[in-house]
Image (cartoon, rainbow, N blue to C red; front, side):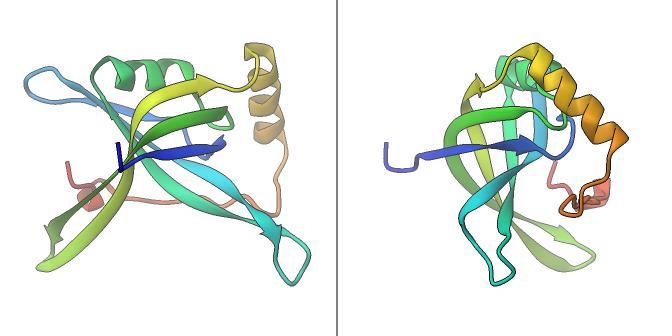
Length: 135
């Protein structure tokens, strides 16, 4: 397959699970993927990549992965567009074909509790209103 993406990173938010009128599950979230080089300040930067999944994979994604989870994904890039207030908005997502747990459940729970108790200087919150979503 030519359109193939492999990413390793941490989820920046719990996956959002929704169902279509026909009952098909859809989930999305964003993964932070650290770059392999440092910037001029000597810090690693991250890219924030939107993930999508459908069907049983969406339910698995939403039920077993949470903010802070370290995961590996294999998938494919999907592009699209939609209209918002008369403007065309273009999207680029990675559609998940395979999910991999990269840490134990207890390790993931420790990561979640430490993130809830501490603020990190590189935490970035992404605010997306429902009107911005293409579905």
